[in-house]
Length: 91
Image (cartoon, rainbow, N blue to C red; front, side):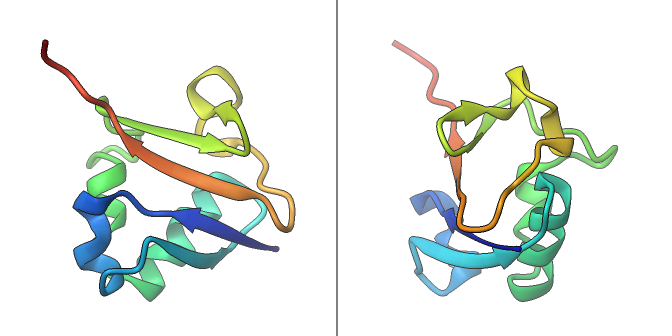
């Protein structure tokens, strides 16, 4: 299943400056694997060495925060937009 993935500015060095790229997969894990194949190194910036979502990275499938859904097992239906959003801290 094809989805579009919105890439934050900080990760665009992995996508040759593209703010949105296509990826394949029916779950978030398979979408991230597809991203890694097309854009080596990007997955390590999103998940840690244990394979868990990094603490300061938020991912939305459509409008749903995956932390409150099924995490990396969240379904990604064909045509869905996945957004990777770095958390902002400070103040």
